Image 1 (cartoon, rainbow, N blue to C red):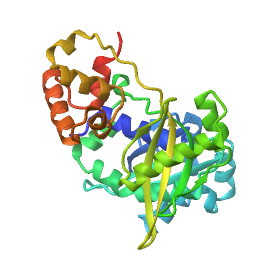
Image 2 (tube, rainbow, N blue to C red; image 1 turned 180 degrees about the vertical axis):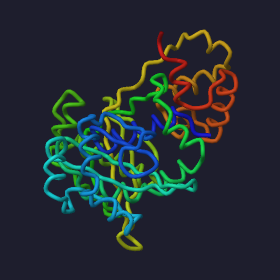
Image 3 (cartoon, helix red, strand yellow; image 1 turned 45 degrees about the vertical axis):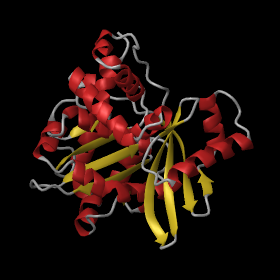
Length: 315
């Protein structure tokens, strides 16, 4: 089952990973009454409905349903483009195929700056994962349900990103990346400090990637594998998020229900640590950590890491 909170988390992840200012997702093209619409001005919704016949993205996605319509790369008729430019600088539109009738359309908007080629490619690559996550009736119900503010999660603001070539370990940073990272660290990062960050990221990628890494100064890295260049060469997109460690109440009365090891796992999980990171701290296997975590969930009556973090947040 997929809950409204899960959809809220997916929406937040999209916003932060791609640096979005607004988005919509729902069955059917355009701003359907049942779509989940986040921070899209009513004026733009009305304008798009009036000029929807001029929108080339619908026909493009009908012909290329596995692609992404990137506004900056396509011709958009004058009147619609003029209205679009008054609100946004760029957008990406795509389809998530659903086993329940109409496909799910999404539109991702940015007010300042264009989506770069890596971001477009990462979105194309991630679409099958999103489809699998939403391939349930409960997903459609959750999309159409009003957002539940109690389940929203601030996953972090996108600070910068880098493309990594493997096996060489070559980093191509976004423009002004060092300045952006220094602002989060609240100190000017030296070349040596940036190299240490790169080495930590390479260690994650060479271990298989697919997991978060939290740096000491409130920076979190998420890795996304891009399609292979060749049999022996791989590329990855690293998203660096400003994500201070969540506060937890270490003296919460509920923790008295847990064993000492379960309390340690519960607190670390609520603060955003992965099972692999907790295992490394405790000198156990990730599966052992997951076993403890399942016991914690049963004891505290929660089902997800997000619910656990909310439960242990300071009151």
